[in-house]
Image (cartoon, rainbow, N blue to C red; front, side, top):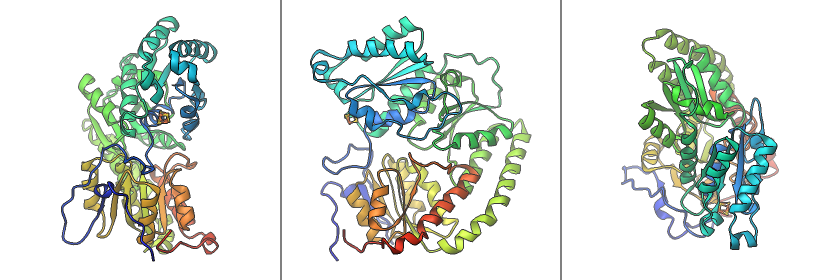
Length: 453
Ligand code: SF4
């Protein structure tokens, strides 16, 4: 069978774990190789996914309409109240605006939209073309903020100026301008902010419920089911609990530097990591032991309920192989543990935005023969799925067609999912989806492809 090759220039971003412990020097955190058709989104998209769930803010994309269309309703990001975030506004720049500048159009759009929708704040996203023509969006934002009385925040996310991760940073910089502007007098000393949880299918509500049951006040969730008012008060919390390695660590670090709020990293996927996320927060409040007692009670109750249900899937899934390609590498760790708990192994693990530290940790936890990839592309993913005979691909919307074309199961762990996969109930939903996809009778009609495309 003909082998699929690897693009010249991509070799250093791929590593296969082999017996004997070869040197690990994966290349990452670099711009994508030209022409590789990277699965990774641009800087603007990175900032948009982080800020998008702030439901009572206006999100205005300053650039050509294509950028707005690309990110319109990009995620579920459900809201328990306002849904202004689900509208995608754009200044729709045309040729004449590119020649003469788009500042007037931006100003007019902002005034019109703020008058019509009365948002609590406005985020203005700078796209590639703005970086080229040099509109001073900071000046326009300052002018509109002064005239309307609401925070108008520029997001410097010109698509070409880095990787998706730089977009996360641009979003955090914008959020940081809001933090510290609200009242905090009535906030409990036993309080947290949940960072990096985007409430795609109601996960933020599940997590929030656990912490509140432990007696902890959740001041803000950034940004899932987010509200401008809550972000403004976030500096009143005692601890920042950060999910996912990439998207919001920079905000946590900035808040630590400015307000002295420490942060911990957690994951809400899988029994092991979900339990640790509750225990680690409880440990932060040693003077109130009942918080830890309650955490133990929740874990014991939920595991007692969940464990027997998982066993029936384990019999069918044991020995099956999974390939994982997601945004942040931190999520991969949890997924590997969750799949192992039902007897599955991982043959390919990769991410769009992992750093050296993440990949080193990934290498340590992977089995021999596992391929680790950074900033991959469809051809590469196909190659390893075929060669390693994966039964399942876990990824996002852009990876779904790859799996289906190859005749292997797919589980959406990203933008488009409609069921929550976090928390203990999310673990059940996840394994159920894995089971239904891997064991589906549909594969007899669309059998798995062989070792070539
Ligand atoms: S910001 Fe640039 S790279 Fe991103 S969608 Fe717009 S044009 Fe494309």
